[in-house]
Length: 214
Ligand code: URA
Image (cartoon, rainbow, N blue to C red; front, side, top):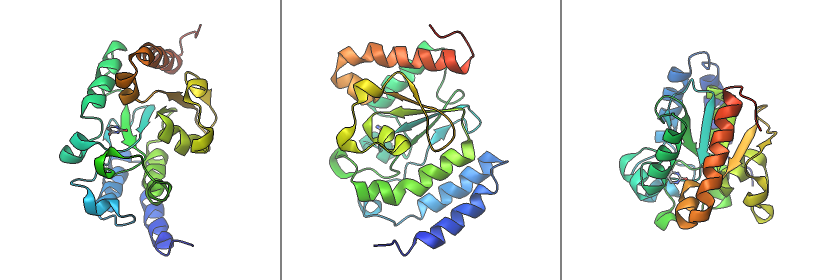
């Protein structure tokens, strides 16, 4: 069934997108729209909406899955254990999360008990991430894990083989490449993936800095 709120929401976001010469202002308007969102049931169980954070003028935009308990409590992305992992990994590149990247999630509200996002929740929330990407206009998007890769590359979840997709740039509908890598939480559960995660981030830095890639 067609979502009856869609035209109104689309119109609101179109107006915001016209401000994209000033990404900070456009993002603040979009943040206000997210903070009013009732498009799925997650707004009832969440504590805080988790919009996004970092440098909106960065050429690199990371996309995660959904807020966890710490993110929900503080209203900021990647501030729990997985966030700590991501922050440390960025530091190995000489990058900080405040200056060198922008970070957002496919969902802006925490699914209860950290369960997987549901297809209807991803669909309901998708205009917000879509608008964030169009405002920030990064040179590269980084999909952290399966749900972000699903969103950015339109790959059905049942066909998702992260091990085969990771470490390479893929074309996307945004006209910029998508680098797929592991979700930082997965590297905590499966320590053997952490080195590949760091390798992918090094590849990213070399690509963005225009270095020769071996
Ligand atoms: N995992 C995510 O995908 N996003 C967060 O913000 C935190 C944990």
